[in-house]
Image (cartoon, rainbow, N blue to C red; front, side, top):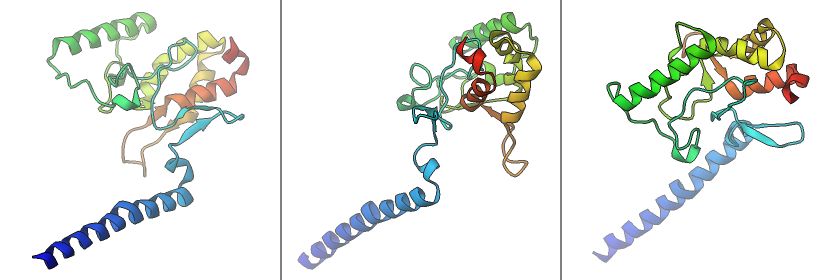
Length: 194
């Protein structure tokens, strides 16, 4: 019996060192060498090194001169420590009321009769950094007016920032809100300050 206990303890120690320490260190080291930006969170920095966010986690933009993100159910909105959907079913009256209210606000602002689904629904994680090109185009007039530029100029930035499906067929076209807002600030710096 003591031999079996000793063998079990040795195996636990061995596999703890192998799978709990050596393997994670090897994978982390490989990631740091092969994919350093991704391994460190795909952080988006200003020229002076100030971190402005992550290209992988959405954030709230409320100013008229910026594209607005889709709604978030994560904590108080895009709270990475509280990542989750709302868990409200499609027949839940609270969800229906929130979607109706959001849709009415977008219709009042844009005059649109058709609203993209991502304009009023949350993603499963609540942290999605992307919106659909249709939702971005819907916001172009507001952004252009706030920046004092033409809608076509804003649309050019949105088009340039639109990411296509992986390999041309995996996923949907999407617009990263943070990266597009940064591109808008770079293209129209005087309007960014105003």
